[in-house]
Every structure is written in C-alpha cells, then in structure tokens.
Image 1 (cartoon, rainbow, N blue to C red):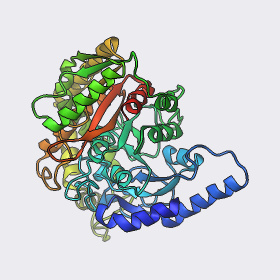
Image 2 (image 1 turned 45 degrees about the vertical axis):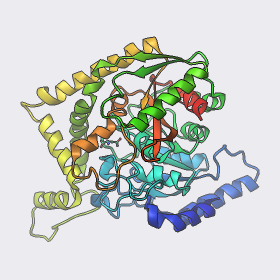
Image 3 (image 1 turned 180 degrees about the vertical axis):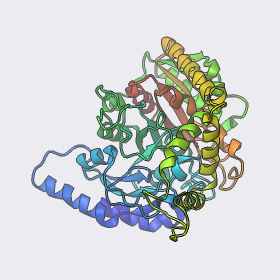
Image 4 (image 1 turned 120 degrees about the vertical axis):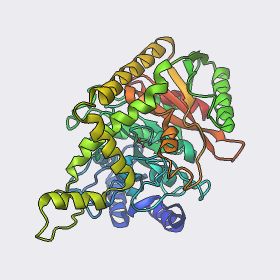
Length: 454
Ligand code: GLN
C-alpha cells in the first residue's frame, strides 16, 4: 500500500505539488516494520500500515521541517511531535511533509516560500490553506490520510475546497507539542481524510491528554469512531447560524448547504435558526490576536538557533545578522503580521487593540454558550465561496482573510468543528463544504452529523 501511494505521488505530484518532501526510504522502512509486527502476530490498530501525509509544521525526528518558510530551510528536528509519536504507535506510515502557507499564515498555499499547491479538481485553482498540501494530497489519492493544523480554518477550509473531510478537534484535545507555533491559544492539530469514518479513526489515533502540552485537556477522547459508525441524527437539535450566509456568499455554496440542512431534517434532526450576533467581529479580533501571538512566537527565529543565517561574516554584529536573516528568511505575509502584532502589543496600544480583541473573544464565547443552550450543534457553509483561481486574491490580504469568516469564530472559542463535502456548486462544479460546530469535547457530534450526510 505504501509503495502504491509512493508511485501515485511520483505520477501526479509534479502537477499537484502537494509535497515539500517525500520520505521514500523512511516510509518503506515504517511499512516493513508494520509487516514484521503483523507477521509476528502482534495486535495492531485499525490504521496500521495506512499511509499518511504530514503538514510540514509538525516535527518528525530527522526529517526536514520548514513550516513553508525559507528561514527553516534545511532544519531537521531532533525530536518527534506528540502527534507523530502517536501516529508511529498506531503503525501509520508517514509518506512525507506537505506544503503550506509560511508558518500557516494564509488561505491558499500561495504564501509558501517554495511553491503553490494546485487543487486536484482544477489545477488552475488554489487548494485552500494553510494546509492546502495535506488536503490536496488526500483529494489526489496521494495519501488516504493527512494531518493538518487549524488556527483559523486551515484544516476545514482546504477540506471544503478539495471535497475532503477536515476536522478541527476541540482546542486542547490534540497536543501542540512539536507543532511550530503560529498562535498558541488557537493552534489545533487535526485529521483529514476522504471519508468521515477514516477521519474519526485518525482523530482517535492522535487525540488525548499530553503532559508535554500545558493546555492539553485531561479527559477521555470523545467517542468519535462510535459516532461516525452510528450515522444518526434523529432528534439532534441543529442550529443554522443566521449571520453566516446571505450577502457575499456564492449562490451555489448556499444551495448545497441548504440541501444538506433539508436532508438532516428528513433524517429526523430538529433544525432551528440561531443568532450569534458577535460573529461579525470575529475576523477583526482574530487578526489582532493571531498576529500578536505570532509576533511573539516568531521571535525565536533569530539566526542563532535554527536554519538560515545571513551576513555572518565576522564583521557584522549579532543584531545585524539577526535582522539580515529575518529580512531574507521571512516572506511578506509573515512580516506584515509581525508588524501588526508588535504594534498591537506595544505600550499605549495594547488596551486599544489586543485588550479589546480579547473582550470580543469573550463575547463570541458567550454567543456559543447561548447557542448550545438551544441546540446540540451549529451549522453553516464552511467557506463563502468555492476554490478561487491561483493569483486571484494573492495581492489582496483583506479578500484573502474573508475566506475565514465561517471558520474563525470556533478557533476563538476553542470548540470543535469540521467541514464535510456536500456536493458541487452549480456555477463552477467545485466542491462545497458543510461546516458543523460542536461544544468543547463533544467532537463526537461532528462525526454523527458528517456520517449521516455521507
Ligand atoms: N487563513 C488563516 C490565517 O491566515 C488560517 C490560519 C490557520 O488556520 N493556520 O491566519
């Protein structure tokens, strides 16, 4: 199976460009190890021997890890992230590292310092981002499973754009240890696959308490696999978020979304409309909180510890080497967010920007809490539009940020959410994502809805 996927990568990745690094030898060695264990009669999990594509933001010992940035080019981490450790103990075979927007900042993979990944549905279009490589690899049958990370939608939005399943677990439900941090209060690793059940099996393999992550939740993993197998929404209360639809949403996206809602009603769910009045402020709050945390997290890329070092000629001062390296090693979007973040955190502006954004975050959390008193899950389209052409929004950061309108409120509140494929839009025959949101540590509800729709 591993060899078949390596062959598939060799055949199509020249066009899709999902992978930054294919670890042929490592993958075959892992597969051989699974075979050996199976031969020795060892008890193996349901995903043993199944290949996976890993977003290049998670460390895997000895395998190049760049987070899509030139500043980390050539860096080989000396340790495995917790996600990778758990993949290994499940016997999952890691095929290689997938392309992404630099430091996970973006919605199209166009911010990768290396190349843009192409959407397998239409090679002229972006696959979404930041984890476009992972979702494209799954959609192009280069891997049946992938891992992404979701800080503002980077698993769900590429899932929607590539017609695959993408799940953002509850914040703290999967470990951040060994994940190169973007915004630590938002970052959440999660699973991608082509079916709801495959995604649930992968979710179960990677989730659970980790003492190495200070915000990890000390509770049992929600019963995601059982929920995916049950595929039952009878009696489930579903809230359609009033604010996530209407003007600015592509008609074909709304049509598929409403059809899915009707289907859920037919299957016995009780559907009501729910208002979340503060969701409209989520995007501006996110684009203050995220750059603030990112500017602090990225301070460690100082040319002394990892990867690139520019201007180290024995004459330049250490400060000069740091600034030359950061100048050469970071792309435009990363620099934009570092400037935004350091400004928002600086004295005299902190209360007006960062402090205010944190208050908005609390209001959004209350919107969710109120909604979950009335319903079990909330639903919306995953994205306002389908995948757009490469280059279309690359020079317009605001247009790019608007991609995340539906996905970002969840990250600010820390609860669970997923995008499930729900058909193709009439205008362009491109995949549409159905977005489901569930309360903290009720990730199982996502799978219940997703598998019922399948
Ligand atoms: N589009 C979001 C951003 O640019 C996605 C971030 C993410 O989830 N990694 O910040």
